[in-house]
Image (cartoon, rainbow, N blue to C red; front, side):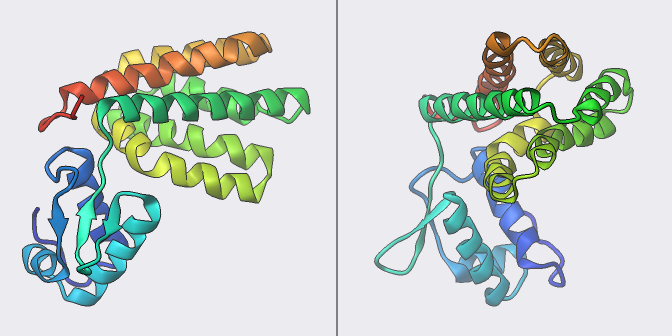
Length: 211
């Protein structure tokens, strides 16, 4: 791990450790200590302790009896199951939006913008925004918080680091067409193809992901 600015918060430290786990550079079962992490990152122990507590809550790290921390990383089977369930959840969210006649014009416009965007960084940002917008439109703060936690982590890492922009835009366009036609039966399939693509892309990461 690279050293980071000591003035940065625990959130930046948590992100740095999280990304190491997601990229496969910190493997499942590997022990972490506050002292070693603080020295490696070039920061004090307090924000490291707070960052590790955040990662425990997110399920990326677990606390051991010796007070050390151990990396929790998904194998490929677990990752596919996780992505599949998130796809089901999001298809259900869209179904609720359609069923209750929420205004989803912003959602449709965002996918159109993603398809037309020529700058990769902007496309990535808008794709992330698409997911967070789903529960924002539903206007259910509890679901918004729960869904947000699911997106941060493996999903946001995948969107930011892997996959071909055109393929991702095409998959989102399929979701857009299903929504426009109010094809409730097609929602689950469209989201499963989208998340299935990302699950497959994890195999190509440097460091790989265990089968």
